[in-house]
Length: 210
Image 1 (cartoon, one colour):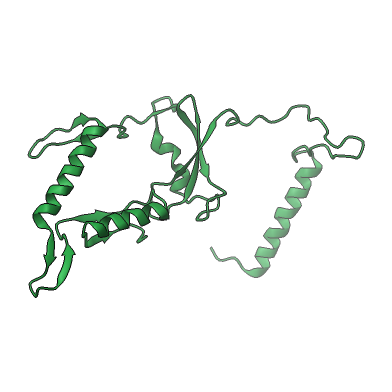
Image 2 (cartoon, rainbow, N blue to C red):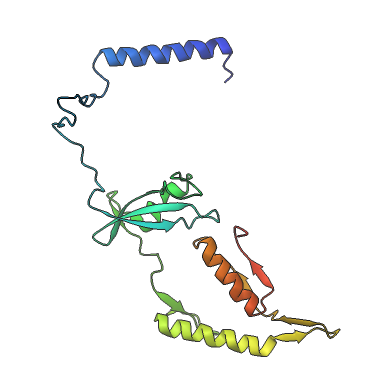
């Protein structure tokens, strides 16, 4: 549908007239009391209570893509009650895209009655699948970290190259691949990059090229 300039002005005037008429008929919201020198802090009869006023605010990073927007998670009784953009974050300054604003729905799903329930498909524990195994098994963090450290050392010992075919010193390990995360800060990315270079890792990538 094409709207000419004349029709646009007509529609704009009609919208302004409708708003003025609704205000005259009492449809406008009540204005708060105006402070005066006699009463600088007037008392509101029915103050609006925020439904997150008793929740704890937790700063986090949006996991959707590689931009790394800051989010505020409001937690009450160990459950997320709301998610919003972090206005103090330098990347998004409080805004969230159409995917980031739905982070609440990553934590919850809705039952037949439309009530939110915690999503039971979220991975909250360390899972390990042994070589040639078909099932995942739950393991603790200490075992997983120790196992990863041993495998990293074994891979570096087996495939580390001090020189290339021409005898030039290269100090590299082509058997490693490092993929960064968007849910960490620039400082953490810097440390991870130092870790990669110290191990001779050449194949380094990141979903946001940080």
